[in-house]
Length: 404
Image (cartoon, rainbow, N blue to C red; front, side, top):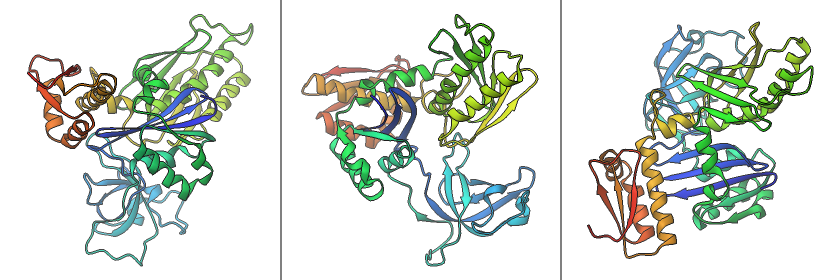
């Protein structure tokens, strides 16, 4: 697939989007009914707490945990504030403010918000209150990716296609004629599933023989560049390998949605010019990332320091849960199982289907994800959920027939 393409695949309980550049998967979005994105929504909230220690404030927006606002995002748009303004100088507890969500929450933390100019024309019965609802999943995916030079928008079904056409007609008319429809399974067909699986691995191969090694904790991500069999050209081997690694690092940061402090252990380079060339290469490849990236420089030990703003859970958090002893999250297993039910029904029609899952997955499908289970049942005709106490949480099985 040449150029940039947007893939949108809808399945019971989830809408997924992917950005593909020249055949490589650069970004993936998971929009789940149990944890939908609220980026772009605006609220009239109330400042619950001002914390000078972290130079930020916590705002009650009436939707889950309190949202967090940094001091740099607390000034009213259009007003010039002090360059190093302190949060206590701009907000006080109990203040009513209008805010926009710029990053989803993760774990037990609330979303991140930025202050917007108050809209005096909008009245609310109380505070907190929602002013503008979050975008629907298809609109969010298109808005996130449409800034690329998109040559194709591929949808998995008629409903998704119609939503995409409505958004493009209103926002990007030139994309309207580039929308096509395939079928459920287009993530697998276009290599997105394989890219996601590879992005959950610790080691990533780079064309030419080098590799990247990712070690991630909650506080820090360390990326080691291992030259392996790639030695580069004589006299500038380390620079060549490092330069070749920068686009791969930029892609993996975005695909894995890694945020916070990032340290790249580059191959040692003796020349200052070589080091500058590698830093320039990294900055170039990070342009356009929806998570604001800052390349801070290189230390005397040859470590490149980077920060990337968090805009939601990382791919690992979304699919595997905690960093310690990661395993597929029950929600990810449940959604994967429902996709498998539909693909099995399409390939092998039958009078009914049984889905065998572990108790923790069954609890989720019968509880918070009941709507997704019902949606899958409507797709295939009859679906019986089978709870198996001895089954591993990360394993499921789709069987033909609705009997025991």
